[in-house]
Image (cartoon, rainbow, N blue to C red; front, side, top):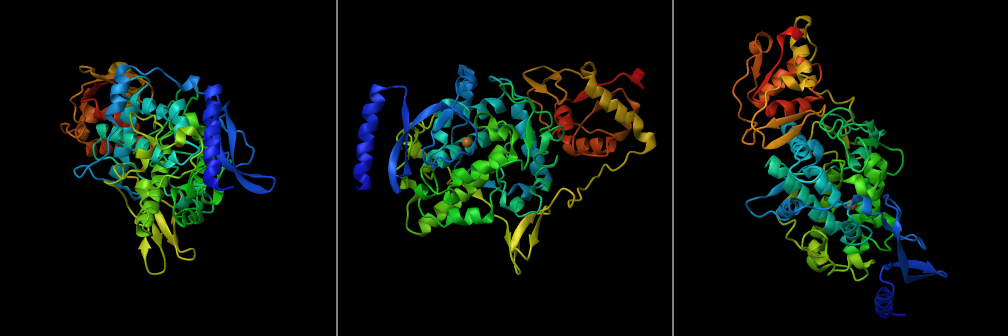
Length: 504
Ligand SMILES: [Cu+2]
């Protein structure tokens, strides 16, 4: 039977059926029936949630998430804030997204800082980071975003919303992409420098240190945690090449595309490989690695669309005829403001978003462009360095014995909130140890008055000044800067803090 006629038939059938049984929905996909490939409709049930099961699996009953738990009511302030994020960049707001390991130290710290400032901003329900992350969990968006061709468009817009949110906090931040193929090519990818406190945090259970140390997630899922490499698989260079060898969006997305070419399925494996919250759709976006991963899939899609243009295919009208579930139909709502599914393939979102070329190298060219990435000539490929290989410049080194007092001093400050001065509050800030501190809204963290070393040991009040003073101060006090961000969050919002000399 001609596939168009079959499709029409299924559509009629579906309309009739959906009318008669309102709560049911169907997933249209290809399947092998009696040895022949056919287009069939499968009823969609409502349960599961973990990443990974292929929509192209024959006879598999697809599942939608259990939603109620994740449907927190949105206040008008929530909606207003979320709405403020739904815009695309323009000429005056060009975004360059680099590979994570190509960020400078300052850029990494700014990114971490912005994430933490969102996490600590409770002017909306939950906090700004979690409220936005939770959008990914809501049943409407979840159904729009997964297991169909809208996967690409939905996550593109969502990523941009997170980037816009981060830029409300630190306006130069863009979301780097995590080229997982650089790790996949390692012998032990879980040793990649990516999984370190200076980057996105550890991967062996609860994250206890670094920018995301002891981050709490919502809905009873506890501390942020990862279990790298337990299951799943990282993306390989071959995966990317396979995807880029295709010409149409419908050839690289669900439904019914062979896994080898299916970008959503390949990305699912990475979610599972990371484990922890990342493994479950509804809470995956609570892990900040979610965004660099999606920045990478978006980077691949950007490259794919460029190739389409070169082949004379217009990516802005390339939405597949067989899109599967109704939530992926071109004129379905995206469940992100008033955006529709078809808007996701428009150029408006990516016109001013650029990706640096994926790191690559060979005998004569080294485009790895990062102290954390090396060129493996035999593989003709850039590979991530491991944590052991990276000699992080540890300015702080070892404490001298006679420096012990200031160490105690600051540690005690952390443990005893009472020592901190409180300024006019307009925003709340949680520090790593969950202390609540009132801060003044007009504080510009790059603009403090000078702190001198003698004042640390000699006076009751320490005034912190510039960011570099904060670094210096910090490195003076400990032999590692992995907790830097926690201290930063603490210090940058406090011009002053007091401590009681009797403690010493
Ligand atoms: Cu997703």
